[in-house]
Image (cartoon, rainbow, N blue to C red; front, side, top):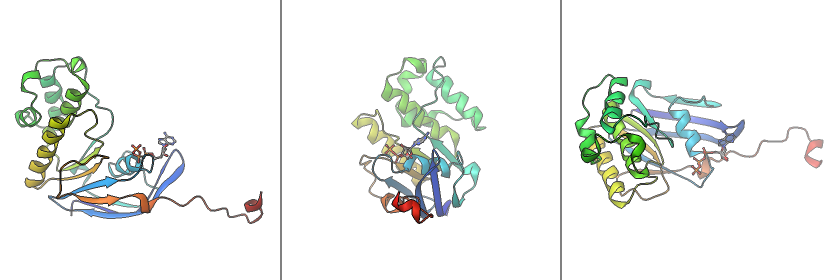
Length: 205
Ligand SMILES: Nc1ncnc2c1ncn2[C@@H]1O[C@H](COP(=O)(O)OP(=O)(O)OP(=O)(O)O)[C@@H](O)[C@H]1O
């Protein structure tokens, strides 16, 4: 077990969005989070990644095992593709970037400044950074936004290779990633109930 979420209650903007969320992620396992827009998937991933505290419940994981990739690519526009990957590798104390370049077919783009990449190429570079971190648990929020069919398949095979190496991933997505081995967790049933009115008179106002 690389990640255990127990009875987690989370809020966004001061409003409770999900409550009582529990699940476990195993080494080599993948879980896909599903649910309608606005239900709280991003909030759940951010909480698990340690970017915001939960209202209640626990997240058990080695913080050094997790890497989070959210909506913003966070690339350095003036650095080339290769420099961006080297920068990211250094941040995580690593050196190896060739596997990341190959997995996301960035070889012909290595010398291009990230700011000049297309939206899909930027996204591929953003995902390639996951590989250079060497971290085993990928927490991914809508990783396939802007990707064409080929790039979605590239992403799916990078995930599969990661799982085969004993890595794990938790992914919020609205599309079919072509990962039949992934378990699906519907977050709808964890939608928080509206705040209860504790003053009886108020209920009639
Ligand atoms: N900064 C904020 N302040 C207040 N409310 C917010 C803020 N950010 C998000 N919300 C609200 O919190 C709720 C949960 O948002 P969240 O982004 O976690 O949903 P989601 O399931 O990831 O949605 P989507 O599928 O559209 O990405 C939504 O109702 C959203 O409008």
